[in-house]
Image (cartoon, rainbow, N blue to C red; front, side, top):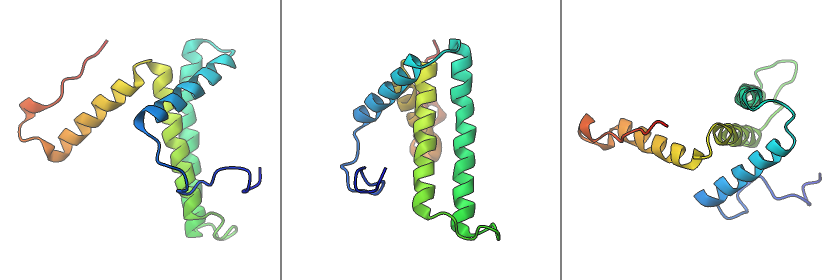
Length: 133
């Protein structure tokens, strides 16, 4: 696809809202499910393993952006690294959605815990509660 027919990977679109991100994730999840020919357990396992592939692509892009491979030189840009990191995020969100329909709530609770751990609360007693189903 040429660069004139697709949206730029750069910042020319309005930032997505939290809800629109999850609408996209739900759509990707539904699309994957409609093409899935494996058991639910195997499909989930493969979606989680897909993260390793995507993280490897981030590493490859960083190596290319730094010109670390003498044979290839500077084969990637930092925009390529951005794009690959976004692939990791999307893949992780789809894997989380594949694990639970409550993915938005799980992520929100996790973000609260991470925020608390970084020192935004004064005592351990104030830590957010984790509800396990």
